[in-house]
Length: 246
Length: 247
Image 1 (tube, one colour):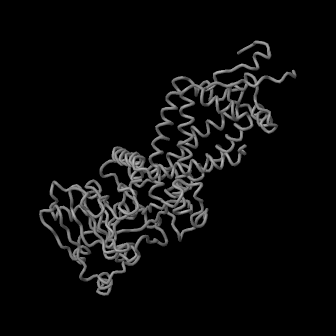
Image 2: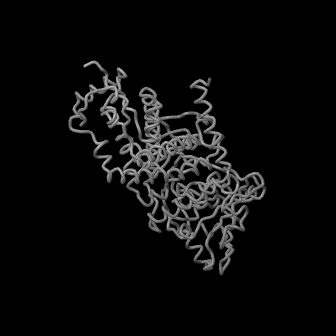
Image 3: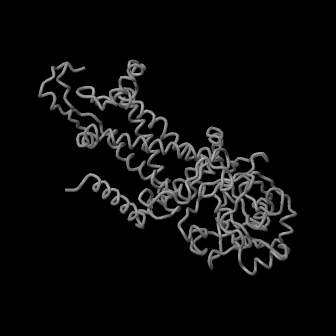
């Protein structure tokens, strides 16, 4: 796409990498997801046992039992035990999560961010390409030059998994825990195998999102936190120069 | 020079302190409250007025249905009723009704019942499935001839938290819902004491704390403002639980 020779001037190139809708959603979602994770842990503190099936309470077998009030104050909102307040936070920010996702997806479909930047190409989904990218990540050999301006296949897979998999699953399993929504949309109970199964899947997806956040932050640190964070605030990204060896 | 670790620690401490400060701010609590109204209106919008909570089969029932909140109201008055096998228990229906009622428990037990096997969802997160036998609340409200000014039905209970009586309230959409019953039986027997003997509410599209137990009085009101703390229920008044518990 750009066949200029690699020069010193080009290595100092500043490129426009993230457009405004992506940047706004990134930060709104960052706050929302962190609030939802922390208020969610407070809600889980109230009954830190998870079950499969329609019912599940203290006398039923739990597949996960974390013991009484397992999550410490630094991990929860609010920091001291308050289920009522945690629910207020969780359900208010749930609206931000849903609205943000719907608006981001609509805008990204319209400005072709999804089709152009997130959808893997035929070449990228070849197992050999994915394997090469895994090896490059394992060597911490991060993309440079023009390649750094595009999502690599592992990035695409993880972003698509979060945007189209984990966040929608969080929302749907969350709704399945609502007795009113179960009356309105009983198919949700069948989809997830009962309210307590939905609650377990909700927790597992939250854990997966937490894992995503940790890996994401590690990658930001490895790729150069100043440049990465600036590109997500102003959109502008200093392109790492290609290695001179060729 | 600040190390990265202490920077992160300070940052997360600041974030938490900020969240706690927001949590204590009246204005921010107001924003969160308005989201609760939005949640209720949105749920009511997607849910048909008489949409039924799922009813299960006997095979789906919890082997043991735990209780929560009060498991034995400790008042001398309740002890006397228990000793009498609730023979003199009555449920009064008053407030904005044309015909106030005083219904002996025997009458409630002998009226035609609806039987439903439903899932009880506690605000804490657990669920239990049980079978309930009871009189549709709509039948009682029709007998009492509810005033058109009535907007809420308040349930006054015999159990006490400290010196405060338990109470709960629902609006007329839930009060006239076909699965909203005054349950006098559970799992084929008379209602046990931990589950609200001799009569409790089942309001199946809301969480457990709305299902008032040990009911002595049913009051129709125009507004919840004049009832105890004004927020419509014991937990709502005391610890800020949401009045609408459909989620």
